[in-house]
Length: 291
Image 1 (spheres, rainbow, N blue to C red):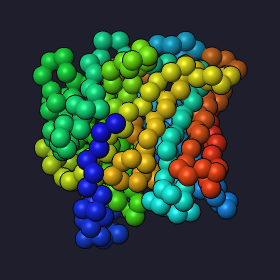
Image 2: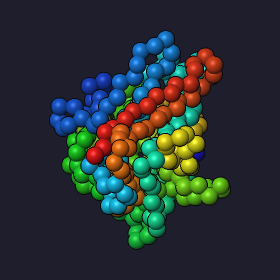
Image 3: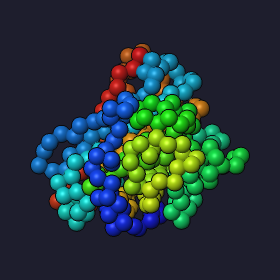
Image 4: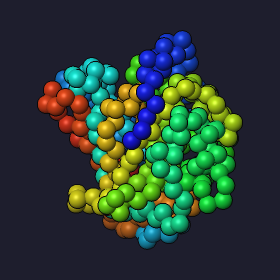
């Protein structure tokens, strides 16, 4: 993983923006699906799953839109030595989901960071603005709903880092790793306002800092689940992420089925924090009915 280490600048810029400008969108458009962590004496996390449409066929066919959100309330946010940062987030997806990259082009973490390039830059290198054979973007068919985007396609979603710094997120199909496992490239650009994430990505030059993470896809070892996504070394990013969401829809890249008697769909999350055992691992889950 490569990141642009400009945390001090990000924090200063966020303070200049003011709290009112860096909140996730609400009244101007339908808010993105949310989750609420429980309240305990430690770090508390939650995950949110939404597949649409939910009336999926009994066998894999066609395509659906996948939305995933992860969120943590930290006791000591951004204080990694006290467990205030996430080290690894692991997501296990229901075995009635299928990932089919096919011949989708890839974009590596190194290429996505591109020396700190902005959203317009990565859009031109790895997204719909790229030359033929280089468009690795996985949200090409996301309708402009859920976070107020007026372009189409939009950014994949948004993220938030401590203390309330907003970011735009974009998800790309990543290359195979050394173990021949498929990867995802997760890109976030900050600091930005929520309304700036709604701008046309092709001309979006907002923000000064990148967070670029690699997610590794593998078979899930958990009964009833099919695929596992593992994102690690999160604490090494310049922006301590506390909330992250994104939509994926591109052709038949993601498919869901709903055979009779199998509802609901399931998502399981495991959050491993820094400085264990001062903060115990957090295991959470979410479900969605299908038909």
